[in-house]
Image 1 (cartoon, rainbow, N blue to C red):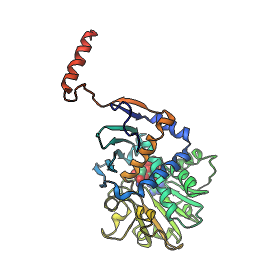
Image 2: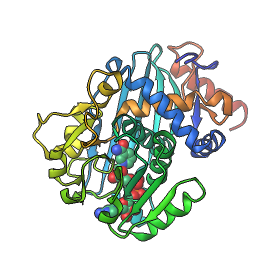
Image 3: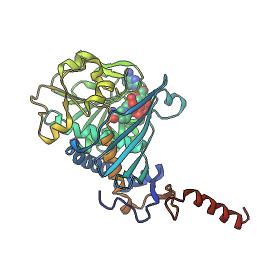
Image 4: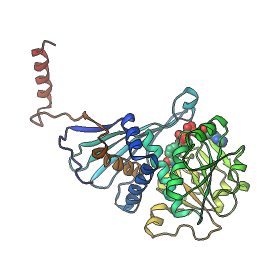
Amino acid sequence: MNNLVPKDINLVPFVSVDNMMKIVLEIGIENSLVGICDYLEEDFKRWELFDKTPRVASHSNEGVIELMPTSDGEVYGFKYVNGHPKNTKEGLQTVTAFGVLADVNTGYPVLLSEMTILTALRTASTSAMAAKYLMPEGSKSMAMIGNGAQSEFQALAFKAICGIKELRLYDIDPSATDRCIKNLAGRGLNIVKCDSEQSAVEGADIITTVTADKQYATILTDNMVGDSVHINAVGGDCPGKTELHKDILLRSKIFVEYPPQTRIEGEIQQLDEDYPVTELWQVMTGEAEGRTDQKQITLFDSVGFAIEDFSALRYIRDQLEKTGEYQNLDMVADPDDPRDLFGMILRARENMSSKGK
Ligand code: NAD
């Protein structure tokens, strides 16, 4: 990343929710999804260079709060994110997030950003990027089970990145499906509202599961899934939280982000700890095979990994000069003598008393 250090190193660009919405609207939602996908591809293709660790999770009965750090040696990034499925009943969101980039050379932060919207964008771009490499040739129809906050982003990423034309929607709460249909109106997708998981997956080339429930759920059973499909399993992303019946996993070729994290959090927590899986980045660099047969079931067992947030933050940072959508935060203390931090407070007190405060 060039020009990592801003002109005034003590001021940190802050992208608020309002700024993020304006950036996305100015660039266009689909263009933003494609742009983030480009940054993801760049970073997945240099995967080995990154510091990697499973995210640090603090679980409670109601949800989880997580920190997701990584670094490419020049830039460090982390995301704070929660997952609280019960929140929607209280008028709150299931997932909220913010993130930071910092200059490895000085350790100074160079970006603070909202990441609730950005997480939905990066998750959708990652899903569509994986599908681009794994889906059956000529895929045109996607079933989406779970029509909550992530769903419109997923739909548009698959349209823009994979060329999906038909969307088959199902949610246990029909009002969620109605909202999703309304929000996607006029965007060039042929949308079918379905009354069961079974009818949603009929004829679909891609099946996305993006439900929220803090338990071992079975959104799809084995008999619902035929050959020649790609499954994009997004919702199972915590210990004890899965969406697919184990038999589907046993019939699929499974692709993951970072195995040590996915084995704890993904669908594959249902399998033996040495069950063979393929890392997505290796398919992207040509080191491993993706789909090897049109009839195969491929499964992207998505849990969300720190490098994806890093790519998304990098993308947003590169949009700031063009859009001007940020505010500078006075976030790093700046004493005249770097060792005289205490004196800086004393001088501030003198300033305050000279102004009669
Ligand atoms: P949300 O609460 O806004 O929406 C979830 C939807 O799933 C709701 O509309 C709910 O009615 C529906 N649902 C629940 N159980 C269902 C069932 N059995 N069948 C059909 N529909 C069902 O949540 P969200 O923000 O859209 O997130 C969805 C899931 O995706 C969460 O579990 C979240 O943790 C996960 N997620 C994963 C990633 C990742 O990178 N893999 C990123 C973000 C979110």
